[in-house]
Amino acid sequence: MRYRSTFSRLPTSAILDLKGNPEDVAAFAAAMPIALPDTPNTRTSGAGAEIYWVGREHWLLRANIELEDELIERSRTHRLPPDLLIEVVSDTFVFRSVSGPDAGEVMSVATSLDFDGLPELGVTFTQAFGLKALLLKRHAAFELAVETSCADFVDDCLARVAQPGSGSLGVAD
Image 1 (tube, rainbow, N blue to C red):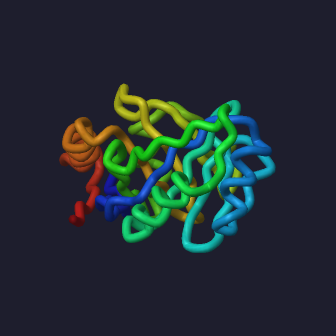
Image 2: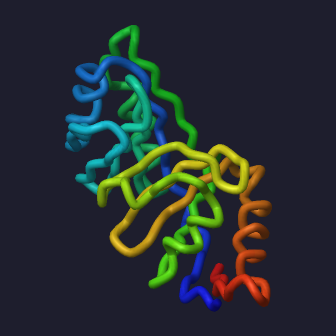
């Protein structure tokens, strides 16, 4: 079987890890302006950024890397409640896109997660190739983020899915 899919590394993103009660996180995000998702394991977007609800009182804010300095400055100048933790984790994750008609088949090799049950704006932490990974569902594609030190390993694993007899996955950098 030949998989009609490609994967590529995505540009580095500005990412803030936000931990605290929803009201405090919402107040910080409203200054962008962007609203928090209403449902766990989903995302919202606005003002050139996305917010992922990834855990109990835990969100990730992702934007274009050119906005990183602005986001850092905003986190320093915004009057933060003492229980709100904001950490810059931009260089912690490497994102890649898996797209094409057979992207779901490729992802089923990477993870045992039933991503068909994820909503269209779904986002969740899971395991991919045995590593902690962030998975985003995007229309007919997926984004997979892993820790930077594991990125080459995941690329190698995705390439192995393409070996003769198990499919053909195009690789783009």
